Length: 473
Ligand code: 5AD
Ligand code: SF4
Image (cartoon, rainbow, N blue to C red):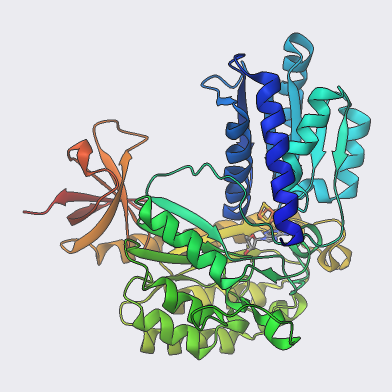
């Protein structure tokens, strides 16, 4: 038996032990997920483990026996949120003696764990990104030995298979294909908190997706900090890996997933423009289930800033890649991430970003104000941009993006779109909500038995962040 499988077997024994401790006690838990889809996927695994122990998800966040926070550290506002939450949890600890466990990316940052130990000593358990699979053992020690526990390691985690998982949706599932990042973009904390790139084995991924398809899931999103370098480290360093059905790259993985019966939509986030090879473009074009919306993080449109960010492509190379993709992939739409106000960004650099946005006409732009992260090269750069200039540029970018989105939305009006129905709209109970292939939200009136189905809708109007549709025919 592989060493990692043995470790998971051990954790399953701890799950059983906790089950025995809390049985018949109707214990409840809550989880606050603060980060990206990778972080959400980790939370689904934490929930899977906790529910197997016998805890029930609480309806009321203020009445729980176990409170878990899964943190993110990509930008500064996540820190404020965590410390705000810890203030709330302190009262629950004092009043009801609940157990508090804090995990995730922020726990890999020493200055944060130090602060928690000093200022929030009531927290019972801290766990990092590389020790997530040991959650049952750690919680058992907290429960049985009534002690506080810190389980954070710095070295790169291994790939663990077979953890229980409790997915948030019945129709859309995220599947991690690789973890970690080797790119070291100079603004980014991820390589420090998630470690080096490592890929899951093709057979494990395919078998997981086959199982998900059998359970009725229709859409999957492949996750990784750098999805299109799937198995790259293994190939480049001649590290032996088990090939399965000819899968030895991201493109071959997409092609094989495309064959899995029951799966109707395949998405992936996030690829890196520098690794967007022709075989991946061909696979997207030729695999009918791969959605024709591709997320292609730009970060900046200025070659100077891209250089300072260590992104390894120029403005022209990005635009050429977009042209090539548009030529090869019919009906391609693109979304992107942009950081405004990175160190050294001049007015001219910012204009270059606006220029790329004008040229590409993205379907969606996720905009971020640069946030200095301790330990990254960007934080040590001297030419930081004053906050008011960052905000002023952010607003100008937002204005441009919004004008483009409302113009772009017009092209949907009168068209028939395939929409995966997710359920009732949060803002209007009488309406249903779903998403197009291009990930646009569509709101429409319909029977609730349409939930989890892919149906044709005629688009009748646009409202910036969503479209309105009608059941066709
Ligand atoms: N400041 C602002 N935005 C950031 N991102 C990553 N690091 C930072 C940072 N320090 C953005 C990038 C990335 C997205 C997930 O978050 O645009 O693609
Ligand atoms: Fe996700 Fe990065 Fe935030 Fe971690 S730090 S939760 S990997 S966005």
